[in-house]
Image (cartoon, rainbow, N blue to C red; front, side, top):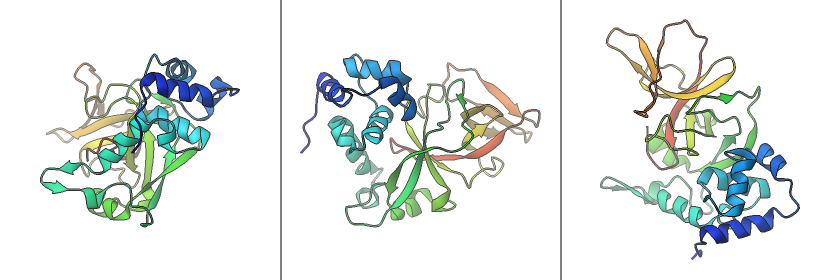
Length: 242
């Protein structure tokens, strides 16, 4: 069983890995949420790592998540064996059993934003891949195609409590028509990416809004804005199907 480190112990192990490493460059190259300033807080122990940050560190050092944060590795394992209502999903865990077939889904660097937006990168930058059970995908997600799936990070709090800052989201890029179904979509303008809820009104118009009640952003999709729908969010790492 993994020994859970305290926040101070996590910080100490992380400091040892960063000995001689250029922190600003690392934060930039591996998309550490919050950048170099947040990295410094993790190193000092002033702020515990979330899953998005720990994943970035694991990718950067090419190690398993448990070598960065046993605490988060245990949480991920627990999430994969959680229950949904009366139906156990142990046999339908997102992560396949050792030796079982798996689908590698790309984890992209150009994360969409749940806040004011994030700069769009011209090309999808692959920073890793997450292996997922094909059986779980077929029965729980039912994607348009396995190769249409992408993982991205989300930042900000405008979609809280549906998503939280740093959550890893599963996007089906084959679902790009909000007229087919209301839901949460990744939207791109000429310079920005957003994750917002798109719903249809009684008059047939479609509204873009945030789930956070403290955020008042509501806009109508009426053709006045150049918006490209990149896909629909179908799952978030905390196990909530959308």
